[in-house]
Structures are given as structure tokens and as C-alpha cells.
Image (cartoon, rainbow, N blue to C red):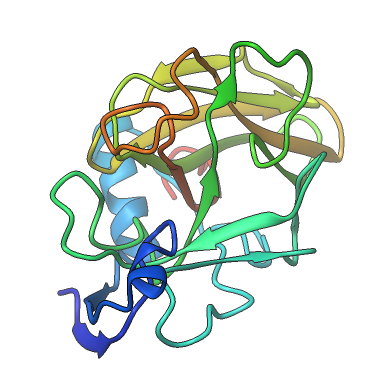
Amino acid sequence: MAHKSTLKFGLLSAGAAVALGCSVVVHYNSGQTVDQARAAAQSEGGISLCDAIDTPNIGFETPAIPAQMTYNSYPSVPGWRSPRGELLVGRGNLDLPLVPDAAAYGDQHGILKPRRADVPGEQANTTLEYDLHVTPGQRYVLVFSAAAASEGTDLTLTLTGAIMTPYTFATRTAWRQRVVPFSATGDTVTVRFQTGLRSDVGAFALGRGEVDVYVDVAGVFPVCPSGE
């Protein structure tokens, strides 16, 4: 069961609470455990998954966000990188109806911004990457969840160094776990999440393009041989 603690004077996701001098209540709820995510993935895929491989900080738990904040930006986050700009990490919310009230797993998640349709090329905060150290020829399953405060922003998952077609889907307003099988062709597989284009980016409203896309990863699990 998720536990809940209450902190006062938290920050709105855009810092509005501080600017307005408001007192707000932030609920920090823990998401599923890795074991719960693995069990759900096995049930959905009808496959047996061995213990997760060593993937330090794949769930964005480090660094810990300072108290009384719902998100923070960092020049670097262990394990993760962004081609441009600082990395954004979030947790909790302000009881906003269209925002997940917890990370999908653990206590923190990654944050992406929608890409601007009028700006070509790579933009800050639109891409997250992580290098997996794997065994060539081994079959694995990547288990992750995504959500957004406004439906419709596309998210594309690419696995470089693996046999897997790029996977694009539209985010929803609640966490949805996704189970992605792949086979490693080398000893390193790069996981890459990138947001799609939004023509309405710039309007500050939860129902428009200036919204966050949330990504959280439970882990990478080898497919167990039959009988294990």
C-alpha cells in the first residue's frame, strides 16, 4: 500500500505557489515496488521474468528532491543524461485532478517537456537517455510507465543496440505500465525517451501544450529460460 505524508508550503509545478505567496499541501505518495511491477508485467506478457539486472538509479530516486518541492532540475542525474539542458525530476503533486499523485514506482520520476512544432532539432528537456549493460543475444523486458497532465503528447521509446522497432504512443492522464521485450545485439543498449511535437506549447494551462510528460522505469528483466 502507498504511504502518504503531508508537507505544507510546497511548490506548484510551475512555481506559482511561491510567486503568489500561497500555502499549499503537497502529498508525497509512493508508487509500486519493482516486485509489483514485475508481477504485473509477467501477468500481462505471459512470460517468466528473472531478477532485474543492475540498473543504478533507473527509477530517478537519486538525487533526492529537497523537502517542500514537487520537482527540481539537476546538471546531472546518476545513470541518466539529456542531450541538452538539465534533467528534471519530480514527485507528488498538489491534488490536481489531471496529474498523477505519485511516481509510478518508488518516490520520484523523470520529467520531459513537449517539443515545440516551430523549433527544429533537439530541445532542452525533451529527451532522456540511459545506457544498459547487457549480455549480447539475451532476451530482456523493459518495464516502464508514462503519464501526462494532458493527453495527446506522443512519447517515443528507442532502444539502440537491440532488436526492437521504435515504439511511439500517446500519453494519458494516468500512469500506464508498458512491457517492451527486446533482444540485445551488443553489450550496451541505450534507452531513449523523446517527446513528440505540440503546436500549442507556450500556453500555460494544464489542458494545453505547456504540460509535463512523466516517465518512470521499474527495471529491465531477463526473460527466464523455461522452467525457472
